Length: 181
Image 1 (cartoon, rainbow, N blue to C red):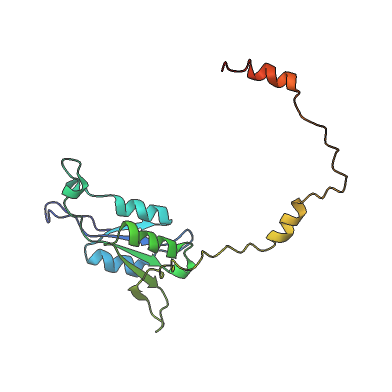
Image 2: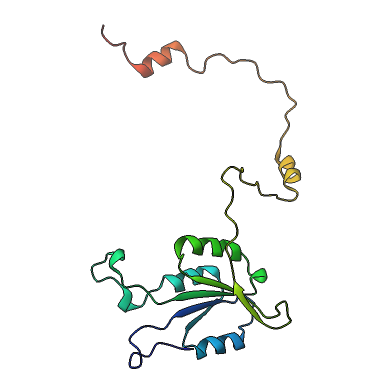
């Protein structure tokens, strides 16, 4: 995988993170094509690792005074989601990237695209929810049956009123003498 060569180029290589998933195969033809373009390729299997790789900045881009506004811009960053339909939470990851890393270009790679060959296309974020619509309640199959089994029905008569829980004398002892007028 390509790494930036300081002798050849003082700028770090553009980083490309490939999210292949837990059981996904790494597409060797895609990796080879990215490597030929001099990309710094990082292969990850889980969405949190994507966020870490994108947040990691080369040392030369760190701000000298600690001010994030003074940082030198990082090289181009991109993410390729391999077979997004098989990646759990890929849409959530895309939405999060739109918020936290809006300049990252996100692509979807399909080994078998519409024409039968491999395809690489922009992976657009899911549409934002309409703020006027109430949030959808998650549907849990069998939840009502499970909840009904937790309900306890009591058919006994309620107990008779036992009276006050504390007597007037006990209350006077707890509160102390009345305040002076």
